[in-house]
Image (cartoon, rainbow, N blue to C red; front, side, top):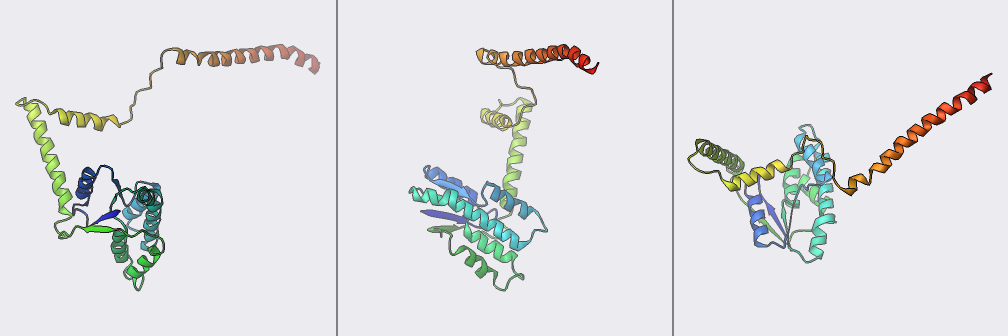
Length: 225
C-alpha cells in the first residue's frame, strides 16, 4: 500500500511522516525530492531564481521516475507499506503553477507526462492548513528550540541545576560527524610491520639503481673516446 502526504510547507507532513514510521516500524519511509543526485539537481534548480520552469519540471519528473524504480516499486513488490512525504500531487500543484503563462493547460500537460508510467497512491493524506499559518510553523519550532537551548545554557552556567545528559549525548553525536583535522595514528602490531619490507625494498631498489648508474659511467666514457 502506498500512502502519500501532501500539503504546503509547514503543514506538518514531516511530523505525520515520523509518527507513521513510529506506529509502523516495518514500513518504508521515503520522500520527494529524494536524496539522490536527481534530487540534488532538483534542489539546485529550486534555489536558482533564473531556472527555467519547463526544465525544472523534467528534473522533478526524472527524480520521481528514479524514486519509483529504486524505492517505491521494490518495496510494494515486497509487500511493504510505503509512506512518502510528497509525491506526484505536489508536482501537479507546484509545477502547474510555475508553468502558468508558459503553456495553455499546464496541469493537463504535467499529468499527461506522468500518466503512462507513474504509480498512483492508494491513499493521500492532505493536510489542509491556512497558508498564513503553515509557513510560520517552522519558524515557531526554530525559535522555540533556540529559546530552550539558551535557557539550558544559562541554567548550566549558573550552576543551579546539573547538565542534561540527553543534551550532552546529542551534542556528542552532532560533533561526531565532523571531520578531524588531526593526522591518523599509525596502526600498531604486525599489520603495520608487514608493510615495512615493501618500503625497504623500495629503498634498496633506489640504491641499486644508483650503483648501476655509477658502474655504467666508465663504460659510457670509453665509448665516447
